[in-house]
Image (cartoon, rainbow, N blue to C red; front, side, top):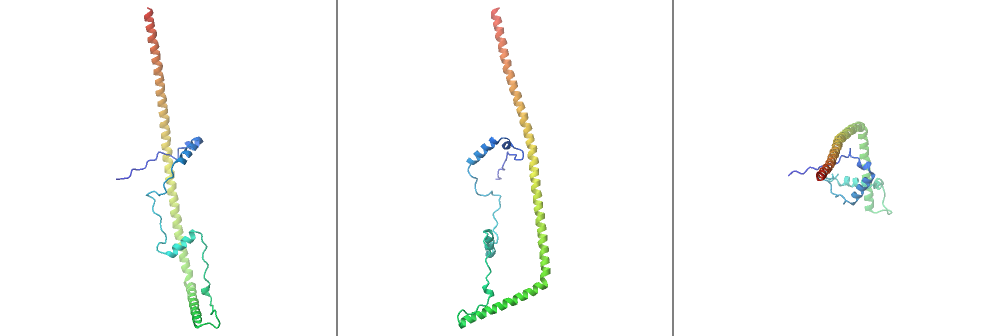
Amino acid sequence: MSETPEIFDSLPYYDDDLEKYPLLKEKVERELAREPKPPQALHPRVPAAVSLFANNPLLAAELERVETHQPFPSLDSIRYQLPGPTSAPGTDEEWQAALKNAHAQLEHQRIRHTNLALLQTYGPNAWRIHNYLLEEIAKQTEKALEELKQLTEDVNRDRKNTQTQLGAQLTSLETRWTELISSVLQIELANVALDAEIERLNKKEADLADVS
């Protein structure tokens, strides 16, 4: 079974009774204050919330950190140092750990040197291409935003024009209805007056007949 369409009898672009009559607005606000709060559940047509980075815990944790305005954790500078054994002259295990750390630092520096060389060779062009792609994405996004804004304005303009036309028709019909009601009341008053006049004439005729 198809759902019953929702019918709205309000013309917010045309109805201005609340602005014309502040007392009426106060009554409406008091009445709304007595109404129960609307349900927190969203409308069935509202799509479900999108869960970002569900398959990437690191990015999900970083997003949560940004949303909660937590400071970025400081970099661990210990791994860039070459500490020696803490005891003198040091045990074999401590010297082995220091030697492994030195090898790791040396490999890190070698990789950095290689990356810098690659960046110097290919980095400028890759950066230009990256910037070009970002500019194109930004242009497309801005264009989509402008189209959406224009569509929103068109919808609101159509709604305003439609409601203004319907409101004018309703006002005209209401005025005509008032005039017809007034005419009916005048006719009823005239009928009452005629009935009274007929009754007076009938009574007068009866009185004349009695006198004769």
